[in-house]
Image (cartoon, rainbow, N blue to C red; front, side, top):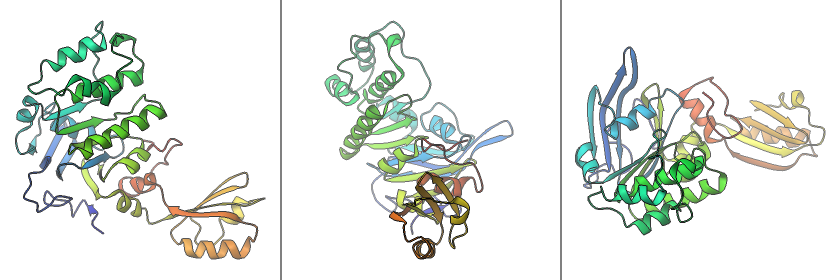
Length: 326
């Protein structure tokens, strides 16, 4: 198992280690405090060119502070940041890094076309506007004024602004906030196209199913440190549990909870979901006692379980949207 924990994580680990190719992003000993609060507490991270990496963690884990520093919006108290072999400011000046942040208003009163055309003119080597419009799906919004856009439409314009410099590294902070399901699916399909073309993507999200589906790798922060770093499958396996789902007429939660291997039971009508660290034992007992159990499924525990296991042992429960409840 190649997943790295806090103690094992280092700047030489992770995909791309040992390669002669310069990484897209490298953080070494990054630290940042606000008064007595240490928001970032010694982060070492290396991201290879072309990787799609999700930066996850509960509120207060240090995600936003880390992203701010690697975009030059905050100054580290200690440590070093290298972007595509150079400094942050060099990457920004040359348009090699693009960012889509949660906060910040669009220029009021301007149309979408006016905004992106003006901002494009400021880039040293801009991406062709036709490509930007296609990637961000702005065709139907160009004549709209920015203060008349919905939340999801505003996100699409922010994405377009991030692409204008034709960046090699894209940093996305909660990029699908306010987007509906269709828009989110389309957005991530575009991100995959960009990654396939060799661009590096670093994103944060509270929608864990997005990270589970999209990311090549997950970096999990807790209390300003890297709690785990590895492929999604390995992060999920850290929950050390399986989910068993089945249909059972007349299911009784209290009785099911007594089965060997049962760690948790949810009953909704005839639909039952059980968690277990020993699913083999649970299945044998279940089928032996309940001959009418059917439609049995066994799956790895959801990513949310692993996130909570690695960052907040005994903490809160994922809510119905698959987010980590803070």
